[in-house]
Length: 191
Image (cartoon, rainbow, N blue to C red; front, side):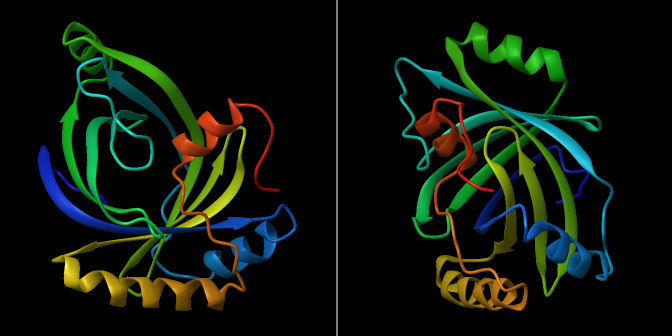
């Protein structure tokens, strides 16, 4: 979500589908026909843990996202829907190298990094992220901010309709971090 806000708190609905290598060209073609396409954005997410505050992957996470446009620290927690990975998300815009040094000074340790190429499209109130994740493959994520927990079922239904429009039916509830930790960074889970 593009913004000049330096800090934010949002309840975010997120659902993703796995794409096989064969599905990618057709999904990409359909997405390119949409308005609102944004440029390809390389990004690296650095995930951290702390000995006194262990995070359970998929339920809570602390990361620094580094892109050519800058860096953001994000805390995700309060899992609202395990099937869609909908969570409360707090973000803070920071300077890249200083963010890592800051977290390390507080006793955090980096556990994993997730490297991906992302192209974002906008459709029906959703940001659609076409992601290629190193070591995992291709995914299409539907992301939308919602006002309250009660809005989650409608967001989920609308996301499922969007995925059906692209003939996608294989959903992945785990985060990229969870998948990489389970695979120990080797092998692909998606085409």
